[in-house]
Every structure is written in structure tokens, then in C-alpha cells.
Image (cartoon, rainbow, N blue to C red; front, side):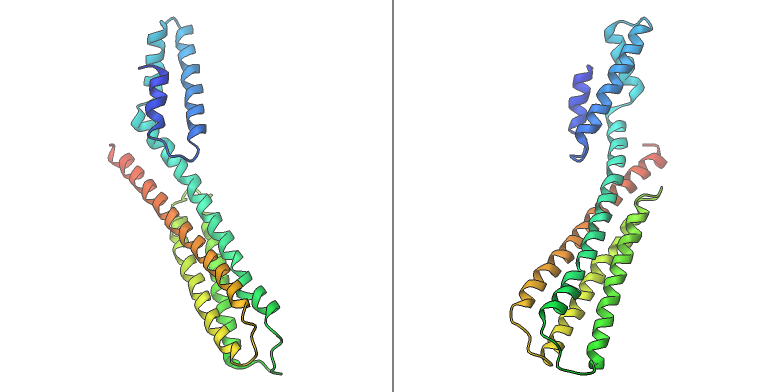
Length: 220
């Protein structure tokens, strides 16, 4: 097998993310290895065969690169979740507080205060969990990041539901402009959707890491 054929077959097995880099690293390593074998006295064909044998089979190399790529994708997913959870502050606080007219009460009703505290607490929990996932993704145990990410979209959805109840309650106490929910709702949906996407992405990468770990421990 030639180096070109090896790279062509390997390309089909590599994830799209970082494929170009993986192939460039592989080609450079194989050509350097083949050059060393030629310098040691082997003919060009034998030198290439030895370089390929030293580097490993396509299955083995593809699995190794897949694991490396899965770790990188886990990190990206955790950062996506963190950014999306932090972004939820706009529909949660900035939009209502700056667009709603001043509340007519001198003392805020207790139920509205409670709803605000619950919504804010759920949002802070989501941000904290996303930050934990992002931290875990850079440890030797990146697969644990997916566990922390499970609760992020759940907390964001909870904060959104409580915020919706807060809007209904708030609108009963003051004259609310008709257009601000139209602005807040898409922002909240985008944030929730991004968190859910990050969670699914991370779990798919976790499954890949688990499968590769089983192969290693099983020797297959």
C-alpha cells in the first residue's frame, strides 16, 4: 500500500472536524518515517511498508483520531452550553426590566418576588452546571462533562417556564407593552435550543469515547 492510498482510506474514516489537520499530521509522520527507513538502507517500497506498519492500521489510527476529536468536540459543546446559558440573561432580566413600564406598586408582591428568585436561581444553576462541564472537558475525564450538561437545558427550560408565569402575573399588575414578549421569547428559545444541542452533541461524543474505551479494555 502506498502512503497516498493509506491517506485516502483514512480520510473516509475520520470525523469532519479537524480532518484536514489529522491527515496533514499523518502524512508528515509517514513520509518522515519512510525517509528514515530509506536512509537505513531499505528500498523505497519496503521503506513505505515499514513506515505504515510502524504507524498502525487504518482502524487503529482512525480510532485514535476519533477519540482525540471527540474530546475537542466535547469541549466545544460545553463552551456552547455555557455561552447559551449566559445568553439567557437577556430574556430573563435585561429585556423585561428595560422594556416593561415601571411597576405601579410601592412594594413588590410576594409571589412576583418569589417567581423572580426562582427564575434567577434556575438560571444561575444552569450557568454553574455549564461552567462545571466546561471545566471537566479540560480534565483527563472529559466524558464527565456530558453528565453535567444534561441538567443545563432542563434548568434553562425551568427558568423559562417560571419567567413565563412571572410575565403573566406581572402583566396583571401593570400595563405591559404588547411587543416585548415577541422579543424575549425568540431569545429564550434560541438559548434553550443551543443548550439542548450542546447536550445532545456532548452525549454523542461520550458514546464514542465509551465505545473506544471498551475496545481498548477488550483488546479489540
